[in-house]
Length: 63
Image (cartoon, rainbow, N blue to C red; front, side):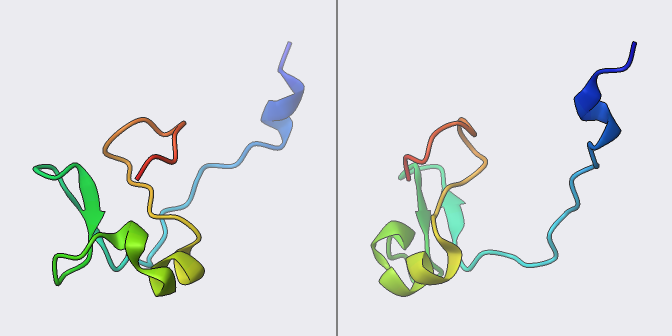
């Protein structure tokens, strides 16, 4: 028997857009190219909605 959800499941597509921030493992935060913390930049938050990274748990929005 095939689970109902598999009738509609689609493979996730990779996004061609890259975020304007990167993960700094030393500080354990997402940072902008100039070193500022991405979560404190309101323009980034408005544009991207969050600054979560895939470095940690994907169930938390803790950055």
